[in-house]
Length: 203
Image (tube, rainbow, N blue to C red):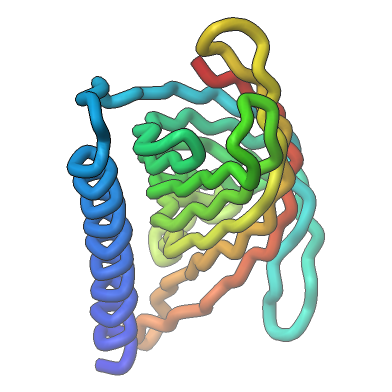
């Protein structure tokens, strides 16, 4: 019962956060359109980023080191000269674990320039599996909510093409459900804290 309530609360928080971010995005966009002297088309951006992640997971008060490659694609809407909102999909591959994150993203340029530092925030859910548990029917490895914040710099290359370099801190929730011989299901909650360094291309 307690696990069911926790799951419901997690899903509620995730859905509420998604709706809140979307509402803020639509509000800011509508406000900008209303106050603009000329109607501009929505500026859509695509980003591809790749990098390396260092960090680990906390299991029963012990820290287990993890490292691996990370890759993500983002589809952004540039709602002003400094603000981007978007959706993203990625993959993070560690020694035994693989995460597939789906997330909402925010990117805010600190200066109103083509070459400028920026702050970023991501929030979503990761699907996950662990190859060590693939052959065990009574074990079920699951992903969970993710939160990431970071900063970087965007470099103007030519026209609408940009290069980005960023560093991010990410907290990832996950869990293992397993069934014992007495047919009881237990849950072990996992927490990953990671730092990622990525380089990307926006077009």
